[in-house]
Length: 231
Image (cartoon, rainbow, N blue to C red; front, side):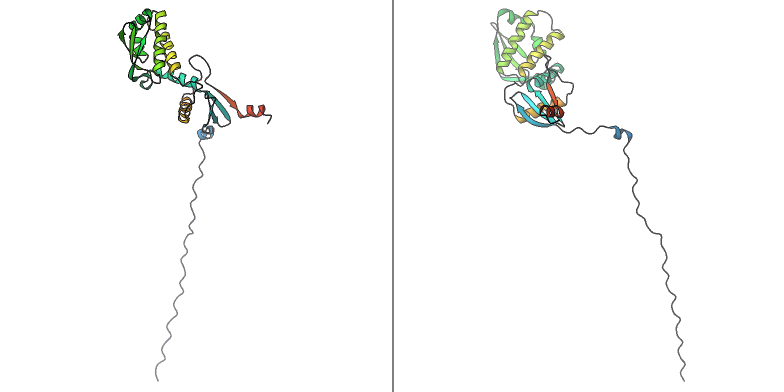
């Protein structure tokens, strides 16, 4: 008889090894600093609406309507540049020099104060026989304004036969800025209005023109709503 083969032992059951469960790491909450909590909300950007009567720039900012006298604003900004003697405002070489003829007293006053004209941005030289030649002038002055400005400055210097004090230079800067500024009543390009409004916004201390007139007025939304009986 053949021997009966023995039955192999059953394999031991495989017990899975327990692994620790992985949990997602939540980021720590971020809280604003005391300074951030105290900071005021950002101001809304200004929006150009347009120009009224070719004189006033209309700008909307949040719930405020701002009306800017473009001549007064431009005049004050030019005046400040002239006082700081910024090159951009001080010099433009004329392709065709401007001749200015005046009476004897004014002519003498100009020749005695050529350095004053130079400080004000003019390159003036004697042309003889009561006439001077203007080779350069402050930026934004055109031919007619250059001539009128030189004549007015000559008259002022003839009446005030003293050295050019700070007060005298301020008068000259006022005169130049007024003549060179954008004129009220003349249409301006949109780009010019935007540039002027942005420059004014960058100089918040500029509120009055050199003559003391306000540059802008502001109307709140609530004021307009009262006028229209909405509140």
